[in-house]
Image (cartoon, rainbow, N blue to C red; front, side, top):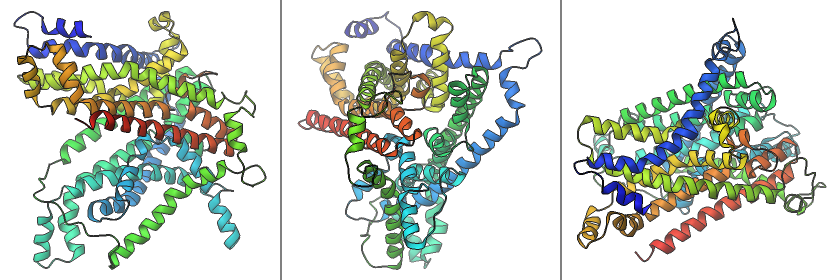
Length: 574
């Protein structure tokens, strides 16, 4: 890498700096081109190619199929309902985080990261154990009132799970928008005699609309492209486009229909991404914060605080209920007594090995795939983020600026595309066409797919860090005789180390919890922790699935905490 660095900066004199930096971005661009864009392009070709004389292309045939429109209608409806549910649940939490102080507030703020690091299949399991027909909620209701409620395996069960999973996203954006408000606006309205409701309706609400809209739109997008939750909770009657792609490819082996659905899902995901970016750009106005907001304690008597206490109590039951149910269920034996049988079953193989890989093997696979994906994504993402940050500074004229924007969009595209569609595209690419001649093993295929998915997170984490570095440190190193590569490795990279570790932690957790693309590529012997958990869940072995979920969450949390402590240890003395 050092030789590449020096070769870039010792290029022909007169070459613009942004052109030299482009060379550093080429490895990541080639990585994405070969492993992401070409496979997706092949899916588009298969979807638009006629299978025979007089036959319609699969993409056009799908548009004439009422089943496709039924899938699209259900996918859209459940996403709309889920977005509204996420807003109803998340908005009060965003208000509390921005306007009240209470013990454990930082812990509650940390829970708003749940959708980004918590396995969605574990959420589905928690809902099955807590809200299922024989779940904890129905046990309590039957014991007290002699009745049971049917929540799961219905539209409303899916909506409830999506609302649970995505409400923290809304809370996070609402909290950020509310925290940026200048309190002078509300104080001016109060001084004019406006009551609380009027102040909120006429002053506060219009100013926090950006947080509300962006958070709700994100919840809609996440619900629209949800896979694990719908697969586990939808039953045989309810399926989204994501689940339909998996069913057509892995169950029915209908690759033509799978290609058509994957193409339309990719188009939908790109449109949704551009819609979100357009809304975000339209609404983010950047109101300056002139002074900190006064944040009163939550546990002070007032009618509003009483309502907030009630809300938090319900939220505590809603969130901790499924999680505690999973933990308790993992310690219960077949006779209902406390037992470690489930952990013995998953840790020591006391079950039919034809059902799934052993948990130890699934754990090894998850760690191997995560480490392998970081080995590709971390250096490529670091180089790309460095080049992008410095190209933005060196760019002169609209042409160079548009080039920087195009490169950033090119690298972030995996965030915008359905993971199931990408997994199917990778599956087809490694089996047929030019890439089949490379003889990529299934293990390497999963590692590369995870690397593609992790790369945008690393770029997003590192680019701001490189942009915000004080250039005087680099200039001082250069004035003392340091080469370009020495200035990067000895000055810039150590200063950006915290962002590097954040990107690595995000990439690692994404790989460990990723299921949508992996389930399309995995073969017997290559199952990861989420897939192994889902197979236990599908076999209705809930105790073993709960034990797997506990182990997976503990493993992911331990990895993230370990990286955080490593970052503190390395960066503490600086």
